[in-house]
Length: 304
Ligand code: GLU
View (cartoon, rainbow, N blue to C red):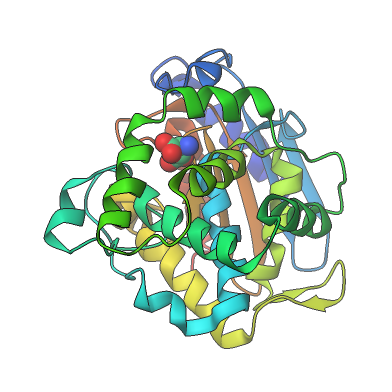
């Protein structure tokens, strides 16, 4: 399959979407990003890498990081994770408070903000310096020690993080946060601020494509069974309340972030990342989703 040509076609056919979405502006530091950037990277199973456009421009990972923190929590405490967070799609916006009251402080899944905050709490309990653990994990998977937290983005989010602060405090009132809320938020805002590019992303996510095995470092990260479960969660919950539509149109387990990135996988076959900062009304990259939809349509490769 000529992936290089397919990426060219996708770039051309999605160009008309430029200017039609909106860069996230609720985190002031993200609002500075120029909207017309577009990058793609694809890592095939044989290790061949294909890139297009701004594939090596760093951007804020935001919620894509939730897959990695869940992976670390999963390695640490296994299925005990599910005592504190569910695994059902939420059908609500990523930062919604409403379900938490009805469900007594147990978030629907680890990929909405409330769920990711519980995962941060788990990491805060397990490690004296969880930020270091996460950064090491990401740098190692991507084989890139230049990946860092973006202190400006983390600080900007901290200063405007009233909703995330409400979520964590609310869950604490139900006993589902054990650490100091400030500590949990600090890890969460930093994980979201991780600055990396599409090439870093495909390398980082390739262990999920290879059933839990990081072939770059020859290291097992998750068992096959846990990797399968991570894929299932990405498919059902990875795109907030647009997860069903993403499965319908694209057919890949994926995870988006409000920085405009999306990482997705076809298990056993390839890892794909796209970045375009302009978002649709669900907080997902408008051009990024279309690019992935065209990719599975043109190649006939989806998980279904
Ligand atoms: N840092 C963002 C927040 O908590 C992450 C949102 C996202 O990427 O979905 O609001």
